[in-house]
Image (cartoon, rainbow, N blue to C red; front, side, top):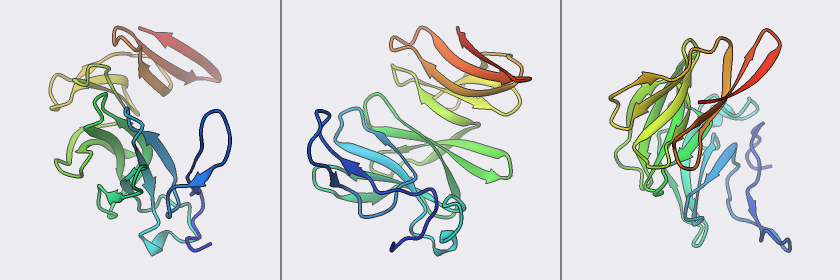
Length: 193
């Protein structure tokens, strides 16, 4: 294809009842996330950086937003760093949280407005998930497990001290509980707090 990137795919849309599908992005996509209003899609791609061609596709990548009604594409982050395939829309759809790799096994979580303005780092970690009220972000770290922080970067708290590798995390729809999975010594566990 035009963009020989591994781990990148064409993005298509169709009605949930089936029927004809149509390609909505002219660039290859690594991962995507619908906006809460279903009118935009945030996605990660490395297509703008020729250093990625023939590689795993995430050596250098960027965050984009595609309006699915008019197919207008906007790049939100620079292509300089590696944006991980972990992104999450705020409940209002006004902001997106995402993870970047700043060095080997060192990760940051940042927030950017959906129009590309106001980009800022809030904490070291990965796998950001917005609280249903949009005031906090749940995330994980390599060493301390699950943590939570206010979106302004304050009031950081450790939520779990579970040993092992924490992978999946999330809030209940009402924001009163946290669910996460952990892997330790060949045992997979699921926790609700």
